[in-house]
Amino acid sequence: MAIFDRRRVPAPEVSIPPIYEPLVGAVDQQEAGPSRRDRTNDEARPIFLKTGLINQANGSGYIESGGVKIACSVYGPRPKLPPYTPQGTLNLEVKFAPFASDPRRAPLRDTEPIPLSVLLTQSLIPTLQLHLLPKSSIDVYLLVLESDTPTNVLSAGLTVASAAIADAGIAMNGLGVGSVVASSSLSSSGSDLAKPSSASLLLLDPSEDEEKASESKVLVGSMPALGRITNLFFTGEAGINEACDMIEKAITSSRDTHTVLAQSLLEGAAERGIGAETATT
Amino acid sequence: MSSSALLLPGQPLPAELVTPPLPQCGSGCYELNGRMLASVIGRPRRDGAVVSVIGREESGNTPDVGSIVIGTVSRLTPQQAHVTLTTSNDRPLPETSEEFVGVVRVGDVRLTERDKVKMGECFRLGDLVKAKVLSLGDARSYYLSTAANELGVVYAKSEAGNPLLPLSYQEMEDEITGRVERRKVAKPEGI
Image (cartoon, rainbow over all chains, first blue to last red):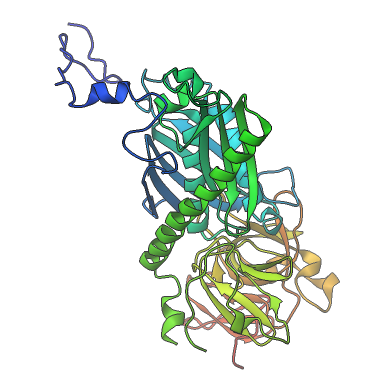
């Protein structure tokens, strides 16, 4: 017999894939097309957000938003290796778990996280006060556990990263929040001939199918508390008025996301006992 | 002062805290377009002319110029002492894998007779040292100074391994064997 290979998990020689029972109503979702059935066009999918779940990190957050699940951990501010920088630096890394998407991803050979990390760094830097952290760096790691589209990953990633940074007690200008709006023209669906061809359907927080069917989409990173935009990422083709409408809509919805973010941060602060001793005095 | 609500980053400070005379922004808050906003999660507090937002104890603070830091001596050369920092302004530094390192150069050990300072008669490995940050230093370390009465060694062990008690500004005594060792002693608080 050959030497036992202790580096690999010995799998059984024969394996059978599980058999799934077809979901009830699965056919309905396939036919959904541009118009939604489960929610209105201005309605975002519910968000679950919790901070402080990763003990080893200085701050952490976990988000479930639509088809995206991300765990984010923040380390720092830690002393930065040479060379000297008068400002702090932000190191941000997005990683996908092998099971995060279908088909499975091969670790290390995956090239998608790099542009996502760059975009997310750009959206996050305006929310931070890096001038207060000379010679230091903040390390942010986002582990994507489940994903549908890169835009939704970015949007949820920005929200969860600012939650984790705020949880770490690092100074910020404001809380960053991401929101996505997709636009698809009604004429392409063929059913609504009565409507003018220029009219288009704006969908807030589009699902994977809706985003595929859309002609353009915009990701807006904003700080609703300050009324400022941190980043704008537009793909596809749209008229100027339509683009403005899409951005308007994204900003409106970012206020709702901000409420969720604020609520979970307050809960997280209560669990950590922030301000408990000052309240008694 | 009544206990006020928890603030989030970007939230304006409550109006009763920013009444004239206009206070200065302390830690945890900043000014934007004439408004004072919180920058960390915490409760606001006003001490005279300074408002600050008090957040997590082990929050993201880093040593800055003028901070009073405490650390242990980790390396000693005739020219300088390397100090591994643990607290800054009475707040713990964030726990990370890399440590904040400071350097006390031989000229910054004490205020007088700077040229006669011998490093070995001021610090020993493992001593707990209180120092002030002079500058952000070079790429690796902060430059520290112990040139003040209340700065210097606050806790040390003798060669025999027993705790030392301060005798004078440059001597400490082993409380068991009675042997005297030389240090740059910090003036104990409350004397």
